[in-house]
Length: 214
Ligand SMILES: O=C(NCc1cccc(CNc2ccc3[nH]ncc3c2)c1)c1cc(-c2ccc(F)cc2)cc(O)c1O
Ligand SMILES: [Mg+2]
Image 1 (tube, rainbow, N blue to C red):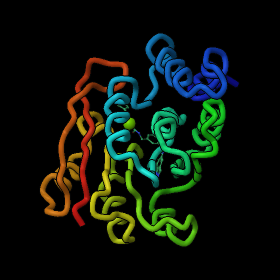
Image 2 (image 1 turned 120 degrees about the vertical axis):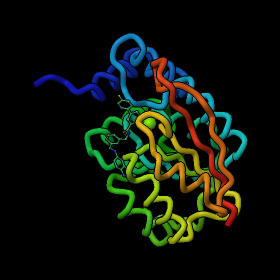
Image 3 (image 1 turned 90 degrees about the vertical axis):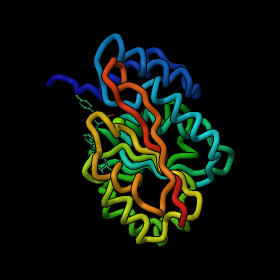
C-alpha cells in the first residue's frame, strides 16, 4: 500500500541529511516540506523563534507535547547542554515510530525520551515514573483543545515552578483561543506573543511564550 507522508519525510531525511548532524536533519525536513509535501512541523521561521527562546532559557528539563516526526524535538535537543533531558509525548504510534528514527538520525537519542501515549495519562506520572520534580521549559504542539486542560493539569501536578517557560505553537492557526485567554488573563502568567507565519506558508500564525509566576 502507499507510503504515508511521515514515512516519505523520514526517507528524505535518510537520503539528504548526514547522520549525527541535527542541522542537516532540520534542513532536509524543511526542504521536503517546502518543495515536496507540506507537513505540520513548526518549520524554519517559527523554529528560529523556538531556538531563541530555548537558548535564552537554557533548560535542564524539557517537556514537549506532540512529537509528530520529531522536527521540533531535534531543534530543541540540539541546543540542550550535556546532561539536560527532553521528554516528548506522542499519542499517534505511527508518528512516534517515524520520530524515533529521525531523532536517531540526528544523533540525539541520548538526550531525548519519546513516550507513546496521551498527555492526560502521562502528565500525572512524570514525578514517579521519570523522577521529574518540575520542568524548566514546556513546548505545546499537540491537539489544540488539549493545550488548556493540560496546562491546568501541569499546574495541579506541581510540574511548573516560578520561571517555568511555556511556549505554544499555532496560537493563531489553527488557533487555541481558550488557552490564549487563560495565559493572557491569569495573574499566574506573564505572556507575550511572537508573530510569525504558519509553517511553509504566508498565512499568519505565531507562538505564545508564557512564564509561570508561581
Ligand atoms: O493540529 C496540529 N497538531 C497536533 C496534532 C494533529 C494531528 C495529530 C496529532 C497527534 N499527536 C498527539 C495528539 C495528542 C497528544 N497528547 N499528548 C501528546 C499528543 C500528541 C497531533 C497542527 C495543525 C496544523 C495545521 C493543519 C492544517 C492547516 F490547514 C493549518 C494548520 C499546524 C500545526 O503546526 C499543528 O501543530
Ligand atoms: Mg504545530
